[in-house]
Length: 137
Image (cartoon, rainbow, N blue to C red; front, side, top):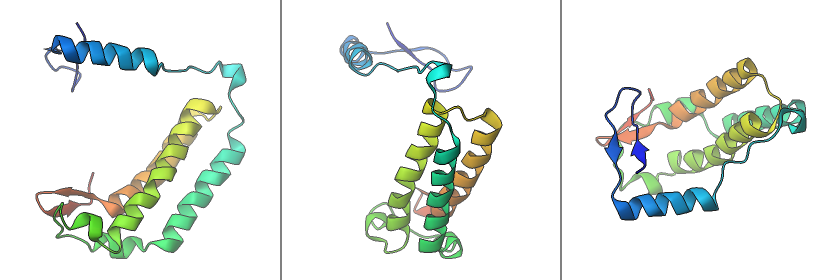
C-alpha cells in the first residue's frame, strides 16, 4: 500500500485501496522522466529568458502595491484587479524555474539564486490565510 509523508518524521498514512489504485495508475500514466546529464540543455539562454520574465513581471506589477494588499477573502481574491493578474503571471515563471532544474545543466547554486528571486515575487503576491494576505511564505 502507498504511504504519504507530509513531514520527514510524520507517521505513515495508508491510502484507501481505491485511492491507491488511482495513484498507481496515475504514476504509470505520468512517469517521471529523467534526462541523462549529457542530454541536458545549456542553461544560459533559459536563464536569460527567466531573468527577462522576472523583469517583465516587475515592470507590469508594483511589488510595493502588492505588498499593501492585506485584507482579502478567498471569495474576493479572483476578482482583485491587481493581485489576481499578478498571481496568474507567476505561473509561467515557476514553470520556467522547474524546467531549468529538470531539463538544463544549471548548477544547484545558480538555481537556488533564481529561486530566491522568484520567491521575492511570490511573497509580494502572497497567499490568503484567514482573510489576510500572508506575504511571508
